[in-house]
Length: 67
Image (tube, rainbow, N blue to C red):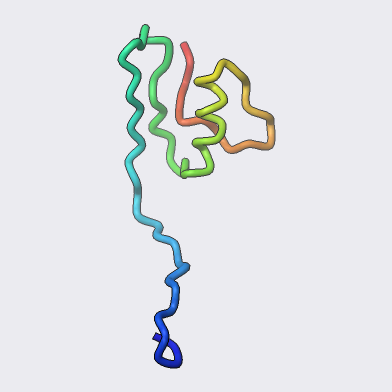
C-alpha cells in the first residue's frame, strides 16, 4: 500500500518455471534441451520453430533441439 492505495507489484521471480509442450502428433522430430539459463524469452524462437521457421540470430535460443 502506498498513500492508502494498493501498489502494483512489478518485480519478477528468478524461480524456475516449467515449460510443457503438448504435441499429440509428435513424430519424435525434436527433444527438449536442458541447457541452463533458458527463460521465457526462449519461447519466441520455440514458437517459430514449431511453425517451421528458423529464429533470427538475435533471438534467444529455442527450448527445442530438432533431430
